[in-house]
Length: 187
Image (cartoon, rainbow, N blue to C red; front, side):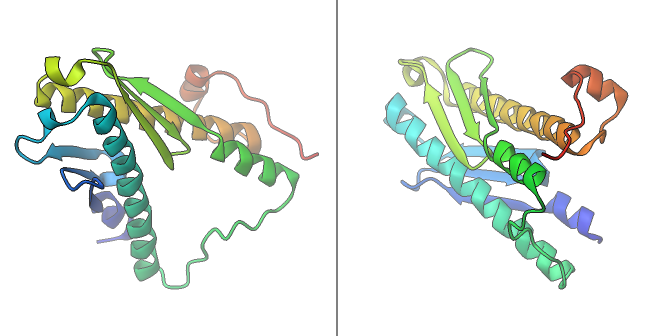
């Protein structure tokens, strides 16, 4: 199995700080699952559940990045990691803007909002009364839909930013979809 296949099969599971919710993230975002311990969903308030889910998202994403790095190190022992070496103003600006990417999405029913800052910080917001009105399976489905949309929007922003800073790296169809970009010149 080559590195690309290993990365696609990589999955990480994390548990919320209170131990009542688990999340799995894998396949470079293609496989996302969430599970409550039996009966625990209805014991949360909207605020407490939002806090647990925000922290859980940070945990599972950080765990995934660590596992990905470990897998790459094991497969390519002499790999040089990004150690934040910068090669000029353009690269510094790219890194600043990459860290500033903020994406958000709302569940199809509008009750759950997921916000991410560079896929590092996460904020889940749940509308008042949601837990009492929405069954666990429908809640989970809506949350995961919003999470997937945040990931898709983040990836689109990264592609747009790379194209803007480093030149055309995406197809004409994608460029039309994401809008025109200009090649930045170093300052």
